[in-house]
Length: 414
Image (cartoon, rainbow, N blue to C red; front, side, top):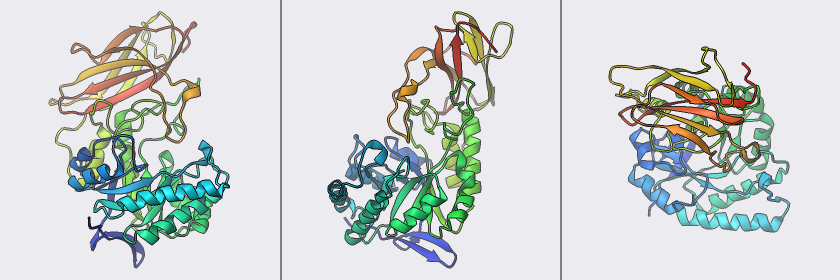
């Protein structure tokens, strides 16, 4: 295989990535187990992984499929996290990790679909030992020694100015930084100014407002925006904070081109577990290609839950009947079917941190027959914390989604 020469060049007052001799702006997505072909179909040109082998495909298989679809890959190199118990004071373990990563780099470095290397993911999250950045620096140096064709980056949780300063000082062999921000992305220009970071960067994770940033119910559960609100956020954040920085930003990877459970099954993925796409996926396609969707996903206005007197409720009384209503903007071409699902909330003791595995909560009931509508009546189950979901599926493969947390108590309150 003949690798492509990927270079990062500062042209007067801005940075530019080149693949061979052609300018390359990253229109990418985070893609672990999602469809590579569908990313190309929607107009993306690259994706990032979090590790070489995702348990389903090897790094070589990922790169081969990317090449077949005309996409480039920022290949993630898994670096152990202190919050998972790794000790960066243990020189033997650190060296062992370096050699394992070296084998992966050596095996994949000449693949023509390789764009760059992503050294670790959010190594600053809950970390205390700054020696982790020495390890990152050693990995970057090793990569440069055996692979002169691809730049290196490391993905940071957030863009804390003090963390940026520390990484720049201790991991100077890293070619560019990558920041992962959600609702906080509007502060990125301020963080960069405070850190005095002068290098290039990608935004390697961004998208819906994070569950830790979202408003909460009075019993502490995060409130998820509906799919239309999310799509508007995706558009605004991309335009105002990613492509707006024409000097240092060389592109981004939207999170997540696929689906995952993290507080809910719908919070972060721009696709659903059944493969349907959301409005956010269509927004990204338009932003990447400039072409509007021929069949836009239906837009949601509100999801409301009321008792028999018509009073809005979020705390319910076990055994009592309630009516949920979904209000939407529909056009003549929308042939919509509805799916309603009531699930337990994630057990607080099993909530993930930093994107780690989180179990899917148990479904209490679901209604997805052809005769369902935008209104459903149900009886509140036994006392506990639940979340009511509704999916409005159009006839073109798209879905609008909304959900609301509900608390079932023995005493009903407003």
